[in-house]
Image 1 (cartoon, one colour):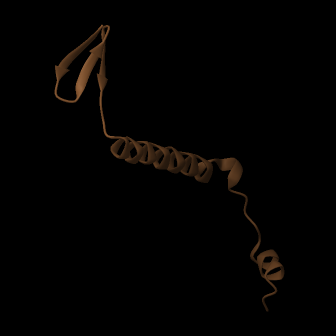
Image 2: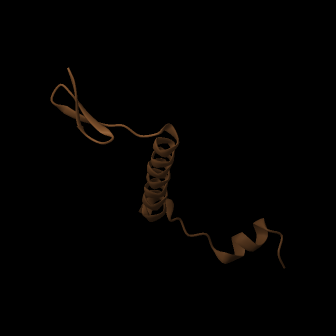
Length: 66
């Protein structure tokens, strides 16, 4: 059974459901994906396993610097 609770939301059974225009939903979804990507970046950046130190001389040699 579907019951209108308030404007833009309904209940399907016991669970409330929100109705959004597709464009708004896509914007919200994109924000969540960007947030998840930022969290993964921060975790990788702060993980001690990813923080190898390279001697300056080795970096100079790799970049063909004097």
